[in-house]
Image (cartoon, rainbow, N blue to C red; front, side, top):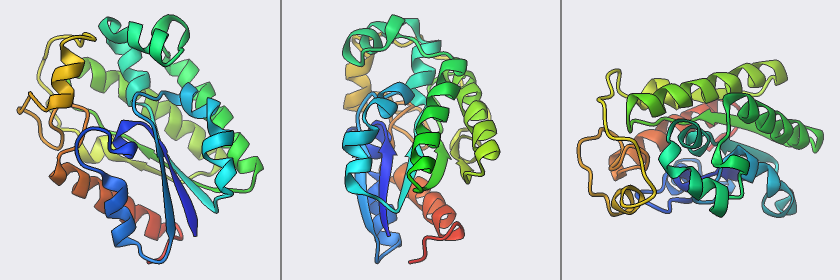
Length: 218
């Protein structure tokens, strides 16, 4: 099968370890295409479906998105990034907007008769980001149930039960420090968002098992 992995920096592997390569190693005999883009929200994914997904004529698409949507909603200090760099009006995506963006993405791909799998991502920066992402994930899960699209909830699997309070995010210096891996008090990530090698392996193992369960043998 030809499968596109569609998402943000976790999928692209911009910062930290790359889980997509580990899934490809676990599920041999398939053509995996990485179409993750750093900083993308659900709206950014929708905008690039034609050039980054449909152009490949894939058999299936695995979507993992929502962390940046949640950050834009819960972290006012980084909204200028989403407004000016990612071209999000007001720099913020609400859970309702996220749900409708996901509906547009899924219905377009289903219309093209492409198999879909949705992974609900984890986050562990601070309680506010976890709560925001839970709202995004719940909206995605409800929509996927309606459209009969299989889902894997990695927030439930990977995010610790107790996430401590941390300062709100700012564009600078926090985004730079996060990319440098300056914070060390996390579990599967080095900055509350991006994967360590161990975290990438944990994510890849869960996704490989999920895909195998839903028709991707290897």
